[in-house]
Each structure stands twice: as structure tokens, then as C-alpha cells.
Amino acid sequence: MMELMSGTARAASSVRSLALLQRRDVRTVAIVPITGDRGLAGPFNSQVLRRAFELGRREEAQGHRVRWLVAGRKGASTLRFRRHEIDGQWSGFADKPTYKDAQAIAHRLAEMYVNEDVDQVVIVYNHFISPLVQRVTVTEVLPIPEDVLQTDQQEREEDAFRGDFIFEPEPEEILKRLLPVYLETEIYRALLESAASFLGAQMTAMRSASKNAGELIDSLTLAMNRARQAEITQEILEVVAGADALSG
Image 1 (spheres, one colour):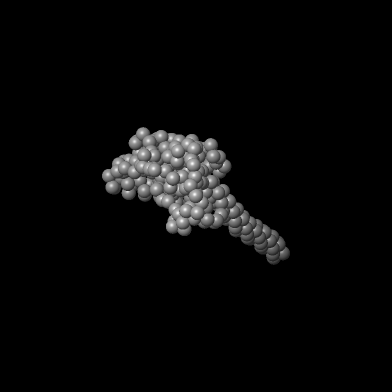
Image 2 (image 1 turned 135 degrees about the vertical axis):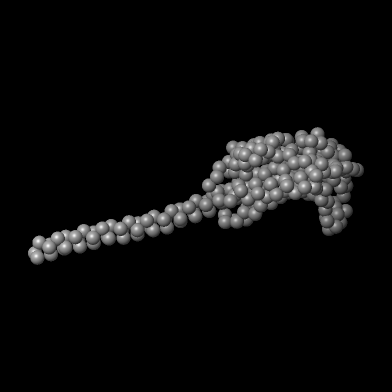
């Protein structure tokens, strides 16, 4: 995708007119936290929401309006609890997202950006490192960074030996179609990262809960055995004391 976009951009006479690349003064920022539909996953949901709220406060301190969209039931319920207005909500696929889910989110975000309802779109999600480690990541997805269309010097030199290509349709039209697909791909990647992180966090949380439950069972079993032994000892002492009293 990156190679195709960069090669087409080099052939285009101008890419400034493409809506998803246009930058403007930031007045309104859309923040999209990607959370899970369920809990029992340790700090998975809370750490994403904490970073999203921190980002929202920082944007508001700079005089920007914040609009909220959210993926996942946990994020939506928390936003409502804090009395935030939600401009878009998606759920039901936190642990198994499909490309169609990413398309729905990307279409809504692109629509808001093209209509100038927002001037910047940021997603907040858990990046999968390992089942034990998930790192909260903040990514600006709109406007699409211009560096995705740029290539290094070596690639430009290699292109000189490849010759010219005839594009059909025009490179600008191809890029116009590719940019929404790039946005969908970025959203889909974030959903997959979040899903892997959710399953890892849930597995870790369940393992920790099972370990804690085992330790609690051992502790209670030991306490029960001690109490039973003390009761038996007390009964034996009472029998012995009664026998001594009768013999006396």
C-alpha cells in the first residue's frame, strides 16, 4: 500500500487538492478510544480511557473543541457516565474485528473530516507487545500524514531506472481512491492490535485470578484444618478431664 501510494504520488502533478490530505487550522479534534466490550481484562480498558481523557483535557486547554467517537461498549459506557456526547459508537467486535468493521469507522471519520466537522482525528488504542505487555498508542489518522507519500533518495534513484508508466485513470484519481483504503487499513490494524491486546490482557487477568484463587483456597483449607484440629483436641481434653473427675 505504501509503495503504491508513494509511486502514484510521484507521478501526480499535485496532491494538495485531495480532501484527506488537506491540512487546516485545528479548531475541533475527534478522539476515538478503542476499548473492549467486556471487562475482566485488568487495566486494558482503563489505561486507554485514561490516555484519551488526558488528551482531551490537553486539547481543551489549547482552546480546541473535542468530539468523541468510541469503539467498544466499555468506552461508550464510561463516556456516558462522564456526560460526554458521543458522535459515533461501534461495538460487538472487540475481540474479533473484521475489515468491514474498520470500513464503518473509517467512513464515518472521513465523512466528518471532509465536511469540516473536525480538523484532526486521533485514535487511542492498545498496541500488542506480548500477552503480558500492552502499550497505549496515540495515532493521528486524519489528515493523512504527507510522509506516507514520500520515499527516500534510494527509491527515487531506483525509479529512474524503471522508466515511465502510463496511469489509467490519472494518478490523482488513483490516489483519491487509495487514500480512503489507507485510512481503512490503519483503522483495521489498530482494531487487530487492540483485539490481540484484549485477549492477552484477559488471559493474563484470568491466570492471575486463578493463581489468587488457588492461594486463597490453600490458605482457607489450612485455617479450616487448624480449626478442626483445635476442636478435636478440645474434645479430647474434655473427655480426659471428665474421666479424671469420675475416677477421683
